[in-house]
Amino acid sequence: MTTTVMRFDHVVKKYGGSTLAIDDFDLEIGDGEFVSIVGPSGCGKSTLLKLVMGLEPLSGGAISYSADARSVSAMTGMVFQQPLLLPWHTVLDNVLVPSSLQSRAQRKADQGWARELIEMLGLEEFAASHPYQLSGGMQQRVGIARALLHDPRILLMDEPFGALDAMTRDQLTMDLLRIWETDRKTVLFITHSISEAVLLSDRVVVLTPRPGRIADTIDIDLPRPRTLATINTPEFGEHARRIRQVLDGTEAVTS
Ligand SMILES: Nc1ncnc2c1ncn2[C@@H]1O[C@H](COP(=O)(O)OP(=O)(O)OP(=O)(O)O)[C@@H](O)[C@H]1O
Image (cartoon, rainbow, N blue to C red; front, side, top):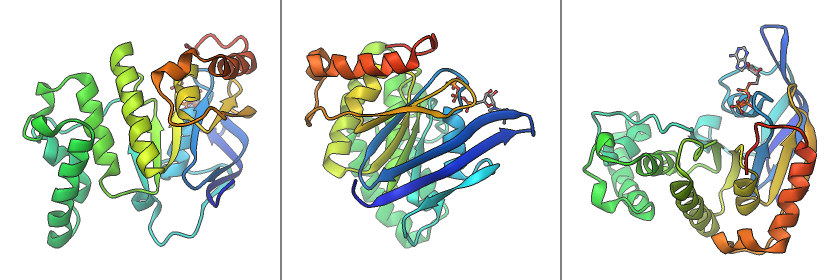
């Protein structure tokens, strides 16, 4: 593995003293690595991201980052299942939301980068539109652009395509692959979809039902660049079958 960027060291999370959500979670994520986490509903996937973001305190263990002068919030970008856009802001202004607390000079510099991101995500014609004028997929693209604004080293994605229809989901998956393959950020990606996890990832971490523990970690050595056609290869099928086997009996996971 390349340089470790993020390390979970025997992480434990208990809510309210009784609900054990995560137990003894141990994982190292390398620089530029794309790691997905799959597991049954309620096994603690979102909890892991909340712990990374510092939104919830750890009950045990530690999460550490490689030396980076920036704070965790500056080093990470977060994409949620719902893009949580401000309805009275345009697309451009929504992408610029993280810039609002910056200095005037930085805000000015961010404007150009925001426009580049909007273009990269195929929204250049909609920079002046408001969220209600966009489809669900377009809104999620705005959410991704916003997460990339401060050029985070680590992108945290919590079922970002979970609320989208199948075709839009495929399109956004391919867009994410394209962006990731040019920029190679470290990505921690939560999903219910085995196909999505296999298509995108270098490694897939499979969690047990709650309390979430690592049931298995599967290396996805499919060649890159990957396309939707990759899904039809026997190697892809092998990986997907292996993950399904590990998840055996967990009905919440869909293909
Ligand atoms: N703030 C909280 N207070 C108490 N319990 C919580 C809290 N947040 C989550 N939990 C519990 O922790 C467990 C893990 O929840 P979490 O949302 O991390 O699971 P998940 O794997 O992301 O679920 P899903 O796939 O359905 O989104 C669940 O039993 C949930 O009820």
